[in-house]
Each structure stands twice: as C-alpha cells, then as structure tokens.
Length: 250
Image 1: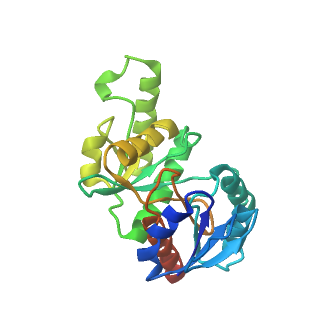
Image 2: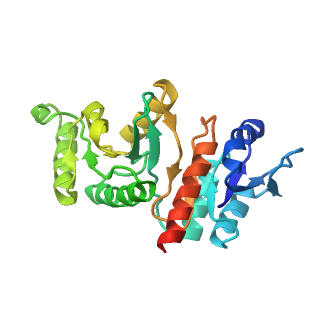
C-alpha cells in the first residue's frame, strides 16, 4: 500500500519509527520543510496539511496518517474534502498486557448523544471486522445500576447506556471497563471527555499503546495520531490494513 504521513515537528522521531512499516508499504512524507537524507518520497509545502488530504482524495495515496501535522488544520480539511460536519474517530488501543480493543468516542466534542453512540457502534464494528477483531460491544456509563439517584448526570449516562445497548445488541457494562475489555473488542465511553481520558490514561500513564484512530465516517482511509506518540509505524500498519480491506471488499 502507498501511505502518506505528515511531518511538522519531531521529524527524526517519526522517521525512525517508520523503518518497519516501510518494508511492506510505500511511504510518502508530506512536510513543511525538507528532511535531508530521508529515504522516502517527500512532498514539501508550507501547506503540507492540504497536500496530504488532497493526495488522499485524488487517489495518489491509498491511505493517510496525520503524523505530527497540526490537528486542527488537518481536521478542518478532512471535513471540507470529506463533506462532513463532524469527524468520528475510533482509537485502536492495547493494554500493557497485550489486550487490544477499539475505543470511541475519543474526541472531546464527540459522542454526547444516544444517536452518536449508536453511530459509533456501527462504525466500530465495521473496523473490527476489517481487522479481524472481536465485534462484541460494551457500552459504558458513569456508574453502576445501584448508583441511580446519586447524581442526575450519572443517572443520564446509565439511561443512555441502557438504551444504546438495547438498540444495538450490545452489553451495558456500567462503569466496569476493567471487566468489559476481557471479552469485548469494542468499548463505547459515556462521552468524548471520558473516552479521551481513558485513552490518555492507558497510553500515556498506564504503559499501554495507542495504534492510531481511524476517522470512521469518511470515504477515504485516514488515521489520526496523538501528538504524544513515539511510534508511528503502528498507525501506518493500521492505515495499510484498512486500505487493503477496503480494496478487497469494494
């Protein structure tokens, strides 16, 4: 697969992490500055964000990874080229012990309604199927069923989780994420803030790993990455696997 990846800051770190992924994929870098000695094709532009997204939508690359390009600029361009009002990202995470699962929502402005959560379940199951992962889905809430009445916000998360679980054939696992990951390949957080906190706690404090977050509601394969990432090869492998699945399926 031909994968494009953006580089703004930390070029050396990104380049070093691409070695393993480049053995089975063609890599093109989209950068704001030249990178002396790079073994990869490179597109240098002051507007590297648009060059990356445009290359993706013009079919010059099979999939794209944000890398270290500024998130806000890239996300605005994806909305423009993808003709969508919002972006739905689903993170592929791995615990310290090696358990992998998909988590959504992970953007703080995502997943605040029942309808959005239902959409995330559908998108996550498609990604799980493409990656050969367990599609069993857990819906989390802000407390146990016995906590109803302790706080209106907690009550609403429980009511929402019960409704979403029933409507999607999922399991309401209450607040017990530690149990949910044992036999569920998909975890739906109560909202984008809690999902983002789960992501950051696992990947940045808990010794786990983040493999990238595909944007699920686009017609092209785009994998978002955290600015705190140290290894971008997994995001390239993820983008490549999804692009390969899409080509074989469609």
